[in-house]
Image 1 (tube, rainbow, N blue to C red):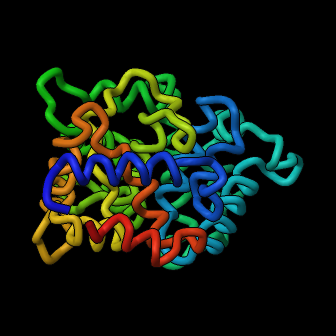
Image 2 (tube, rainbow, N blue to C red; image 1 turned 180 degrees about the horizontal axis):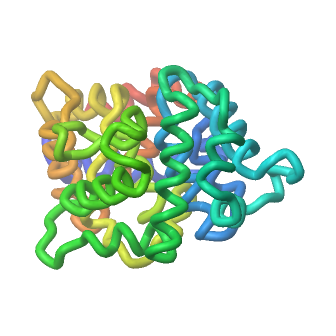
Length: 276
């Protein structure tokens, strides 16, 4: 497509077609929608996003297993409140309940540390949203500085930088932070797909959660010429979307990634978007 107006029209049409709850499955986001309380959604969302690597079926199974273990053997995980279970458990109880857990290269020790970090953060700040909001500065142009502060505090609460090494990446380390930017999209945006339980963070600050599907499509759309899906590339692609949707630069992320991962999206759909 030759100009922003054509691209904007194509993206708007794609958004209308695919930004629907019916296209969420299979996606870790569906686990967030299973909880109505925003205080539970932010916890389930963080765990779901942090474990969102590998096959989707494995991710869903791992998150469900982790939440069931957190709730304990005497509770129905489908009805339990993750927040209530987390605050009621001691650090030792959390480690005992998650003993033996593994999701690819994430160990039980790392996931336990994450839960423990979240537990202490909520006890001190009231919510993960409050902890994140404390790191947002008035002159921030993107979410990355606040994300760096958020990760630093969570790492401290979890027991140090290496306590949840495979789960809590930081922009400070040069990471594109795909999984945490995905989490922030879920938490901050609110539409038919994203639940948006956080109400105090501006969606204009969000950065695209750059996966291989969005990277390929962004190159085809001329939003980047970079060869690596790194942090600089994520920022460049975000800036490209911001020229079309400055108040909501991550608006089209879900619809675009459906082209690559949802069987309902055909090759014809891809050609219609990418070929003028």
